[in-house]
Length: 49
Image: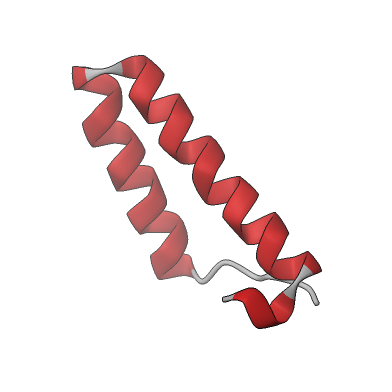
């Protein structure tokens, strides 16, 4: 399965990152990595979401 991010999802992800990076850069990187890993997992195991 190919996971495609909607424009809104991309904007939301960027907004979350921008908010967190000012307060805690490591947390921002961590949550962004978690989003990416979740999308990869969903693509590999489409019934897990």
